[in-house]
Length: 471
Image 1 (cartoon, rainbow, N blue to C red):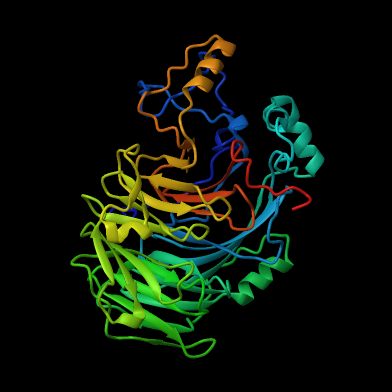
Image 2: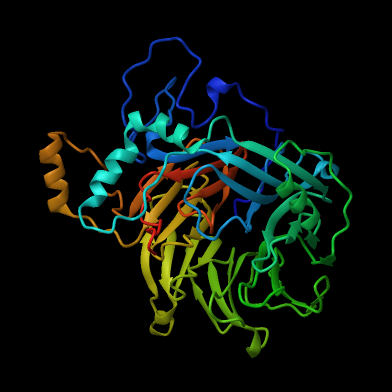
């Protein structure tokens, strides 16, 4: 149930020398030789700090929009369905967690000139993979890549604000009409907004358009009996929305026009505690899933009434987040307050145990979980332990390959024995991680929000998501 940012402070700009992801330091004091830090094995001694290795990323940038944001969403744009070339441009919507209720706002922003290392398409011939990886990860290529791509200078952040009553618990952009967004406020209200004028202004400008919050009125507003965090637009039925609150009520919104909704005042009730997250099925327009502080996950069919079609114990603690795999619709991922996350094959529910994978890597609450929109076996997880991890469930431990690697390098690989082979990447450096999202149009890009701002990251070992030119 770890959700809100308590006693937030406004973000302060850092000196260039101490920016996250730079891998640089303004200190002139000689330091000890760098070594790889192993999560779950090594401990930081007093005075020690972790430094980012830029070669581990194709791109890594940090930014903030003022007050901390508990929730954000990536806005689908018209710049291309699959984009591989730097520099990149991305659009977001976000909500603040300000110190005073009247200081809160919704942010509509654009980050352009996102630079990084050039990535090659997926090799078409066996054996090409190693050579491509070598050329991309070498330090000598890094500067020439940026120069080649014309991505000089820092990313450009452009921001527009809309006043919002109270803190924003969650915000989601509609899949089909991304200028339409829904926000969950700690006042107990869910509001729907039209941000088309702001997005159009950002698209037409390359310069700073930051402004004070405008007093724009929402298209629609509905009051729950309590505040909540669960919110999801249907990917199949345009305008259909679900909202769930801390009083265990789930309400269905049906669109009656482009700008109006009918909200069913009789809630769906199947949990005995707060509804934490909601997810529509990616293939069945009338089916959705919910998770709760009661430790259960419920599957619903709105054609069958207001009770769950199925309900099961998912974790031994609060279930904070769920994610329905859009590329393999039988797979549902869930993250818990005890730090564990599980993958279930929904086809096995009738047989009892549907768990196909269960991980206990994180030791603090899971705050966000999301399947990759480009790789059916890949998902990303964030936790209160300040780690964002990326997992590939198709990976298995290969002892022969590991022995061969040790022989070649003539080094002892002191990886922890219980480190799962499916763990693909560990990203750190943010404090109090809250939410992450993959970019559906830029393969390999993840954006995360935390108490100290945002990170845009593209790990260099996620290479299999770029199609070849002939694809």
